[in-house]
Length: 297
Image (cartoon, rainbow, N blue to C red):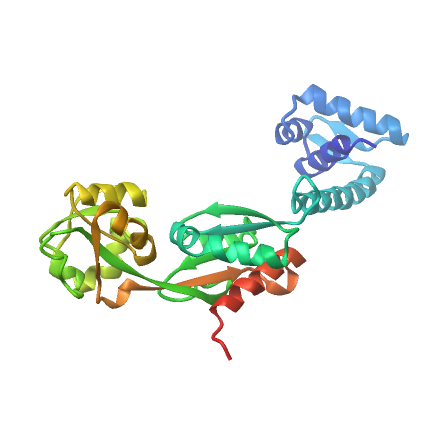
């Protein structure tokens, strides 16, 4: 039996109409009717009674409907299973992480993991921290890495790594000699945006209580290198993760100034939907990442 014919039977029984079943399966009504007729010819019995109000299944049609539902569910399960592997048959792990984690931590951590599990294949997706727990909960990805003030609800989260954000200024800037300061002390200077939490509005929810007034954001630029080059040209100062800033300090003649605000220290979490039901490859990576954040005995 053709799977598409079984799918059409299921749609017709559930919609009680060949026209609506055709719309659901993206077919015109005549094509939907032909598909059902061919199925009836194959099984040798009438499956649907057609009348002016639509269609109803015969006892044979109702019995086949329930079997067809089970068959189609099994096929979808097989398709989902096959999608878990790369084209060469190696298990594929779907990992979502925010930009800071991808740039700062994951290259070395993935290299260390693949040294232990060389046959794994990783599909790495960049996403905002606020979206990642939802992606994990909806099973769009197997594992997520995000930063937040606390663990997100709805997923299993464990501490992964921490970082700090710093202020980046040009050499010779009035703030360049400061041993450390609160962001509010730099409020009189122009800023280049992309802030922690990825939007200025979300950042103000985090840091707003520590500021006595608004920041003057001249330009929004997401790319770290471009932001640092603009800082060098005197277009403004920037807030960015310390390890990323370190990459550009000597190269572009910049200085980092530690931020003393509590929000400047960020906790990253690694999360999964349900560790007990994860595939082996994804579970191995999850355990590896959780182990990084676990304090040494």
